[in-house]
Image (cartoon, rainbow over all chains, first blue to last red; front, side, top):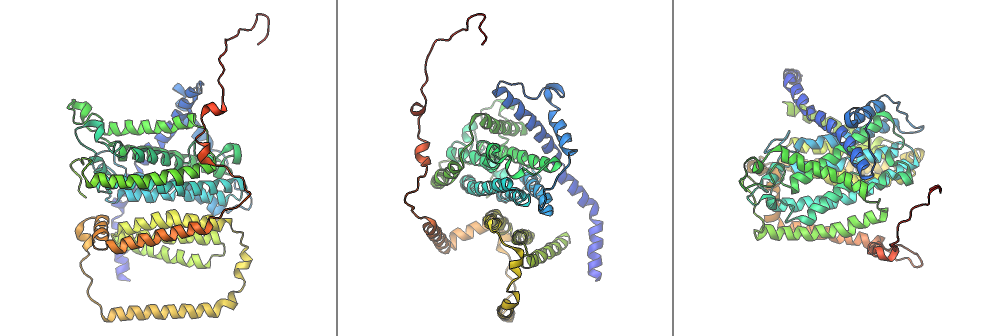
Length: 354
Length: 204
């Protein structure tokens, strides 16, 4: 009993540091939420331009405040729970979608060893967190007690599980080349003096494409958005959600898109390394977080470009692409990556400690 | 100290959710409790600095196996009342099996403690990264068992596919492989024609 009280006292004594830690953990979430709002605005603008429309332009300069107006509108709307829905799971589902989407950001580095957690098993942690997001979708579909929502959830579950394999294999090929699960090490391995030709996108070009396309499929974005498929099943898994519960699903989806954009930049496009590295051009060749953000911005733009360009895939085409095209290619290219690593076909930058 | 508090918290959640798996009437709720059980078990492993095992548990069991499991359980239409039927009938058999398993486990633990050797220094902790050490060990010391396990899993995979793959005659299906090979010229003809302006006074 005494030891228990001592334990409790100790816990209370540590509380100031603990609350500081909790505050620090919450700190990166604010920029993330702001960037999600800006990303939504950018998406509507870009797609508007591609459709030869204006996009949002009424609220704020260039319509910039449109996203915030939408957020406040959603927050003040009523949340309705369908009759005979499992209300506990109905409220839990949005949170289960949001929490992994935010937790994954803990290991994303924006500079050398500059991440909230410079974990050695960082990539594995990312794989674990991104595979959890599907629970929010499945539970939302089931707890809503609605046929449309359930169909959307089933489609999404099968799709996410299928594309996770191809995505995991693409990550494995990166690991084979650099020999470390640490994301900072993965970027450092891409350093060199041949500029952007030192990055992993060149030896792993098919894997880079597969990783990004799988990322689009994992986040249920167009052209893989059969989980929402408004022409067939209204809005898919979140058809019964309104107000802030819907806003949370929206937030999770966009946070995941930004995450995939950042990861593609870190794993294949040299992270914070300059595309002109080693060419001795002063600041242009220097590494910096701005390179990472520029690359991530471009990859995030690709999501919007795809959405405005490609018509939606049919469901059996999605499954065929995942299982019969992507997975065989990833298996073959994993072997190629092994050969490249074994015969020294790829130069690995300094600073990697496997 | 914090670790100890976390361990007890995780352990309490683990036991509570494991009990919920076998007591909840709704099968979806039970499956979700199993997800929570796996997740907390992974948390305990990560606390014990076995981060590879913990994260692999989440990736494999929580991220893939349980998703498919839920997929099936949600499709089933099980009436909660029918779950209670036959509880008394199967109780004696269940109690006997549980007792035998408990006796076996206790005797195993007893035998182990009789010949207990102090735990060796954790080789993974010395190597720095648990994942790197595990990879080294698997691909050097235990390469043959590892490859055999991989082979068995592949055989099981092929067997499962063969079991479900059956040819049905008289069914018309789409062949996506041919569909994606379609060229524009087979479906669409672009006609070149001069532009026309409507005559004045004629509404467009």
